[in-house]
Image (cartoon, rainbow, N blue to C red):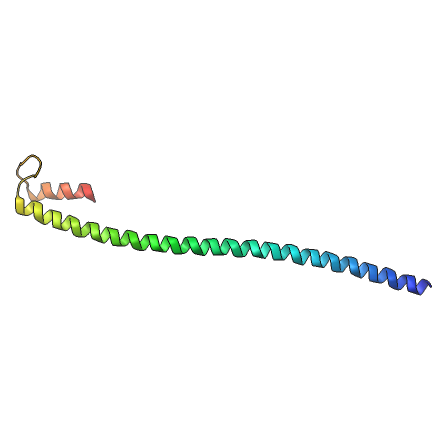
Length: 100
């Protein structure tokens, strides 16, 4: 009878440890899921950032192209389109510097 009681006590202790382990595993699974969600959000943000960088680079090249066209136009005109004053190379460079 004492032997049966000892086995039952032993099994009960193992059950408590198993419950503790199961609880720890469940907590770790929740933590892992949270980390996976954070990682996915980070990857989405990284992808958006890379897309924004590519767009900014395209817009910068387009701006530079238009500024070059504007420089050529101002140089060809030789006069300010607003005040009709004479434009030197330095004046054109100052005008374009304001856009950059």
